[in-house]
Length: 113
Length: 113
Image (cartoon, rainbow over all chains, first blue to last red; front, side, top):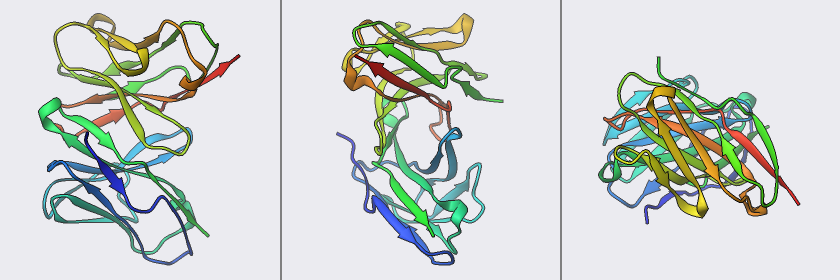
């Protein structure tokens, strides 16, 4: 089975803190994604990466950055957390061999106080 | 522009009743279509997918979906709903290149005894 692991399930951070959300996939996938999920808004793409050190902005990249130093790891960074970044963050990767099926991690609940 | 519409924000059904969740998409080429389910506090789990071939696809947990090109629809069905099916359901369209996905805003399913 494809495994996408988000190491932090629940985080509480203070406004202005730097926050790292880590995601690891174990299937050698090239494409990885970070989404944000909010009630009534569905999933919104923050960033995606199609290779090591490569990244593309999604629909809502403001206030976020990403890092992909190794193929299996894709990190989301909040340089200076704000209360409007309180949300559920979902990491995902794509398995191209099965028709570009996207697989998700369990999600990281971030609360910024 | 590509988009996915789930017209029903919330649906309530009785246990044992049949279920149909609607999904319409707008996409210029032949789409890759997916349905995902999300239990509270969890990530998204793949229910089923369509790439080509038979337009009626079977998924896990007794779900099926039918691709109708003429109607740009990919509705999810289950003949008899179980209480454990209560969750949020997302329809998605993926591209051939695997670097873009478009999600609907989700349909929340409540199952009553």
